[in-house]
Length: 124
Image 1 (cartoon, rainbow, N blue to C red):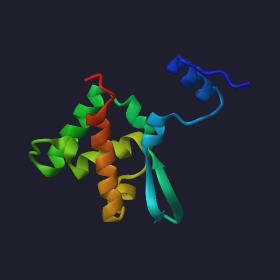
Image 2 (cartoon, rainbow, N blue to C red):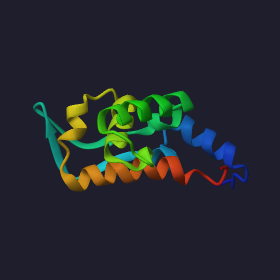
Image 3 (cartoon, one colour):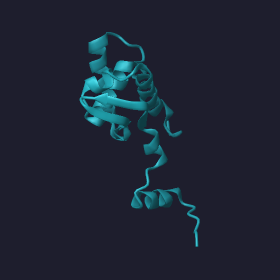
Image 4 (cartoon, helix red, strand yellow):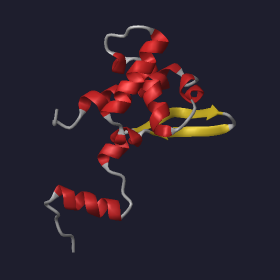
């Protein structure tokens, strides 16, 4: 017998209990079109769900670092260096991992980070 769960929080709790990945977490996984090799290891995806835990102080630190490295940037969170620094911060992978991504994958990374920061869920 299937019971409907009307409360979205109850459904999220049930999914978490059963090990299901939430839709929001799923959106923060960068999937590569083809396997990407870095330091002898092959990757098909990178989990950026750590973006959920980023604070305003982290955003400021990354913006300051990017400005120091690249000069003035009117919208730093829309830049490739910013996306790379955010990815480094939330994954713990070395900067070279992201700097060596194929161009299409790097653009997907930038769009994922900017989309997360600007997309939100209507609670702006």
